[in-house]
Image 1 (cartoon, rainbow, N blue to C red):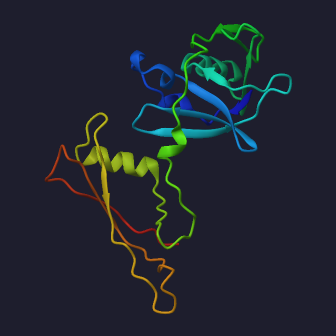
Image 2: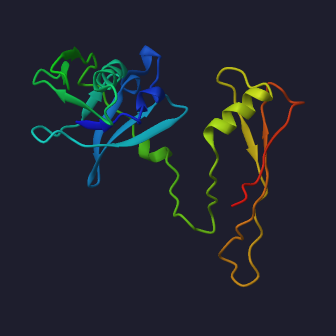
Image 3: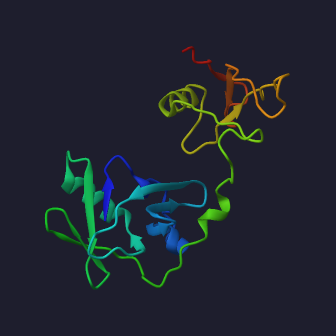
Length: 193
């Protein structure tokens, strides 16, 4: 399996050993594409991968294995992880073999049931683009601690007079607040293009 080194789905796996299958990244076929999916029960990452030509297969890859593959690949944009026949180890780009200590009989949860079923541009949805680094900086500036919750509040744009099924593209500020600091306030300003 090949994956782009910019993807780090292992950041979303559970660190709680009692959580079974969600302590590793799951590789699976999703329609006509292959993906790596990871969740800790609070967030979920789903990124594309390219299966190995000789042995495309579904299964688990440990966080340590993905980190090792990325480290071996260094400055390359792609990293390789090839399952060995025993399933308990993987071969990396440099030929080294590392353990992949995930029980093969663990079942991965049905993650699709938590993904919102939306169509881009649907009148029932709003797509919001936020600079992640900016949001993190602002959250820290107003007192977010550790893994604290950040609340985003914004006005839903009014419907157009011409067509009730579409929304205006309104540049609107977004209020950012954190429960740990109820008296603090952050605002993400509208982007002017």
